[in-house]
Length: 153
Image (cartoon, rainbow, N blue to C red; front, side, top):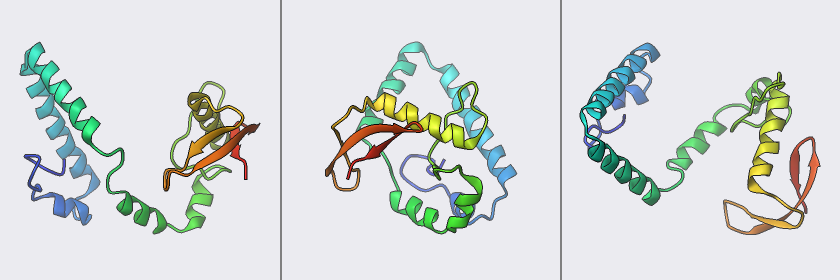
């Protein structure tokens, strides 16, 4: 939503970023933009849709996994730690929770997500995990304590 032609900033985004536009108006704007995209998509033929999909996939492959990480980090640290203690579960996990059947509390949802993450990563005893910050491998001992793999020091 930040760029009209993919190159130049849209004039109204300065207002949005300075909190001068109320949330309800932002939602209306997003609905208008999405409706226009849906109409354009529905007018396309199958070959044109497929080409558009392939172009998007290629663009995403060339793109970094995360953008504006410095902004996100600075915004994160603007919030006092007490806020996180009030709204998050025991593990203070703010990235994602998993709520399968039978999970009723945020503590359970944090544990369920950590368990699922470890399963999907196929962590095994003695496996190395690269730290995202510097690529240094960390040996991991998957001792499951309430569904979480702990890093061996």
